[in-house]
Length: 589
Image (cartoon, rainbow, N blue to C red; front, side, top):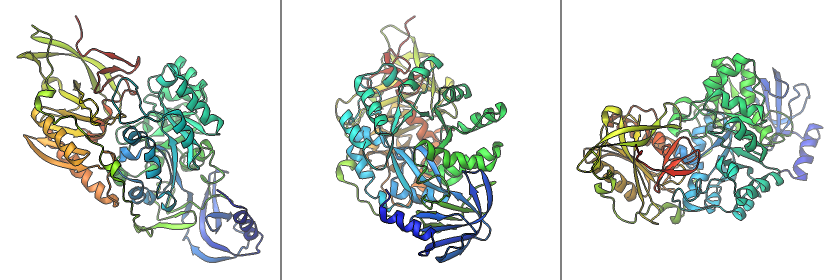
């Protein structure tokens, strides 16, 4: 927040009454407000920009020759989850700042489902020390599907209203269609509280047809990142919602949207970029929001437009454009210096006027954070898991049965509702490797009831062994998929021993494991490279099970999401996402 003294100082510097702290000269300014590029200078005092007038003749204590590089505004990730990246806010700096991301808008709903709203304060403990802006989207889906899943905690209306008052809060986080189309008073109170506080409301309108979308938007929802087809995205633009163009690890939506909107001659004015769910290893390998920008340019978007989507568009949408989103007087000095704007790879990054990155060197040292014990002890099983809990008994007298199955969709987090006929041996339903159908289970991990929901999933590509993960959107129970019940049991018990994480098991042996002890979802490692290396090992060993998915553990975590079509297997039953009701595993004929 601004102060009177800070404002007076900025004016005095502009009037030449006192020197600026820094002048960046010999640069080409990418002005996303006027949509042009020109030679200029940038004068900075403290955290903010004083002037971009290259002929002002202002004085500065320090002058930096930018050697003709382009000055680009810092990039904004409009919607992301730390849990999906498996990385804590401190280590995240090392992953995103070198890529040019200077603002994250984070929804902590995953870990809030484990611990409740008190985790937000823990995650913000070092926010003022971070070399990027950490903003909050207040979680609405805690739980996502009441009565359809077991979760660790809830966030009620009062707690939501308290979080909305935080200085770092920019929005009410993504709200599922069922919470509006089949509304209860508490969800409407949350929305109204956000709007009356001057905050926007993020959407999650996956599965809505046009009629439902109109109703959904009428409640005050302002954007959506869940556009799998262009028609879905276009309908959101038509009803006045922003489209967040998403490129995550398993959600590759940008080529579809950008290609089609260019073909139609549409506008990118009401669009922003987001990653949503992007593993830190993918950030390392391909980039962060700069990847979205570079991909857009490669697909035919002009560079200034692509840069604007990543900066000023997002700042305006979140009502932060007086502080961030452009290189202009009064804004924070969040500046990327890049050799080219045809492909963004920052050489130097400034955040709030401080150099935080230069050519593979992070001047800011890793920030220590000792997480409390209650956040590190969240995986509790009512009893040890044995192979027998994964048996699926068939109706008496059946030699084969027809079952409902989620069918994984390549490159997306959704699944389609399918059916399959499976053999029965000794009264137990069997997997069918010939149809790529494996057993999938959700194990309740809060020590509340010991539920184990066992189902079948198609197109995961696993051929042998088992994979397990203590993150399953958004209830965060343990999800496990396997070719045999013995390996599945070993994997789940290993998750318990680690207090959360990833496990690969093959032929009765643990091939690899990765601890995620912060809520069973996030690594405590303060070095981003450590997390990248561990996840790389996990992905490589997962290939030994025959799985060919590019992000197998993330795909695994979305199978049981009761707000993502079409079928969601939870610990309590098989959920039809559209109706938010249980459906039986067996299809009656």
